[in-house]
Amino acid sequence: MTAAAVVLTLLAVWLWTGPDPGTLRLARLLRRDRADPRPRRWWPSRASWPAGRAEAWRAASAELCQGLAAELAAGRTAGEALTRAVAAAALPDPVAFRSVIAAARDGGDVPAALLAAAPDRGGEGLRRLAVCWQASATAGGGLSVLVDRVAASLREAEAHRRDVATQLAGARATARLLAGLPALGLLMAAGLGMRPFGFLFGGPAGAGCLVLGAALDGCGLWWTHRLVTRAEQA
Image: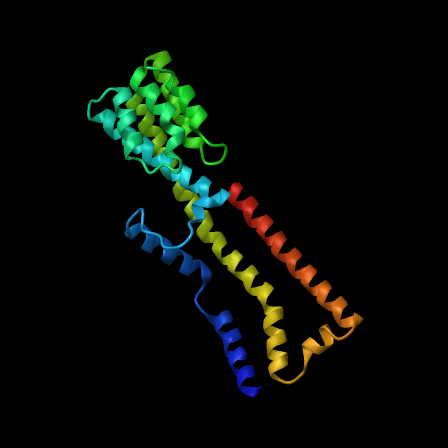
């Protein structure tokens, strides 16, 4: 029991005095930027989650706009450039872009196809591209210049989102740490022979304390998640 208490105490000290979570998050981001932009994954991807899917669509939109700007700068026509850019981009749902490719090849309504393919979350870049395409077709402006500006704005927005995520990583990690401290305290008390689980599960008073503590802990996690989510959306 004494050895277990010592180990748990050392673990708590390491959690409080270890590296800053924001620093660790920034280091992981830098390593990911230097690595392959599409690394092989051997575990379920976050792209299946709503937030992860929106992030994947934003990254794909920026890649599509950059590729389209490069193809237009190379002298290709708008339809051919869009077809090649779509084929080269890593789209989360390539099937949704079949209508875009068909409109680009056959001279159809490309802005309408882009708006139809853009998801509600993460499709801001595609909607901007549709507006640029419509403005170029209506006013006769240079599509290459407009697309290049959209690509630059998407890169700036992605850099801002990463900066916000890095700054909020510390708040998330601190909230998780504080939420787990009661369980760590129970384990340490059990290691010292105080029998906290017997009290919590041995009578109405203990059960009430357990339910109240779990409810307050859950409310704290929910409130912190809500604050962080609002900060990310802002």
